[in-house]
Image 1 (tube, helix red, strand yellow):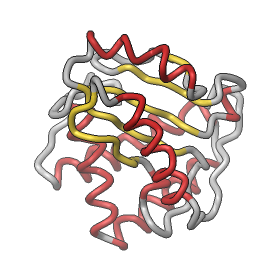
Image 2 (cartoon, rainbow, N blue to C red; image 1 turned 90 degrees about the vertical axis):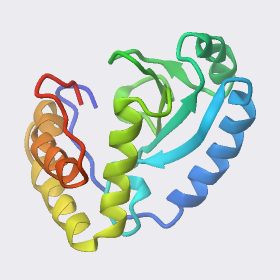
Image 3 (cartoon, one colour; image 1 turned 90 degrees about the horizontal axis):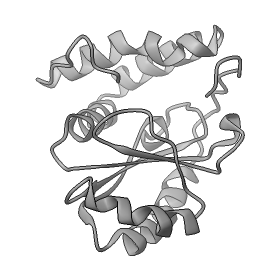
Image 4 (tube, rainbow, N blue to C red; image 1 turned 180 degrees about the vertical axis):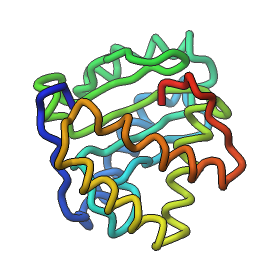
Amino acid sequence: MADGQPVVIVSYDPEWPRQFEAEQAALEQVLAPWLEGGVHHVGSTSIPGLAAKPVLDMIAGVRQLETARAAFAPLAELGYVYAPHRPRTHHFVKPAEPWSAHTHHLHLTEPGSDLWVERLAFRDALRADPVLAAEYESLKLDLARGAAAGYTIAKRPFVTRVLAAAGIEIPAASPR
């Protein structure tokens, strides 16, 4: 979401898992030469019952980040646009513009990377604990009423707390 754009949170859509499965099949086929660790549904749309921004967040493990650059062209054929914004990952969005219209986010990273471990652990913690998921949903709904620019940053203390409970420490300077 770009600065100035409102944060739109919608009720859980039971179609999200099916949409992910269809996208996962296409991505696994296109990414097969580089894939290691699979394609996973992460983010709020991966948590049953959780209100979320209507964006499928996915993470795909690749053997080597540098050699996975060769996947950029095949991903473009699926409508993904490279949108670099953090080190040690290749980030893609679909469709390209406007930012508020994105329906898919895809991160290519190496299995075991900080991003890989954190995204999967956070998802798994919320899936395992409905009370924790409800707390996160309440926070997201409250934050969505404020400025879009601070939405992700304002979620960090909650994410950090959940990951710490899972034994994962995020460095203070981490751009997560």
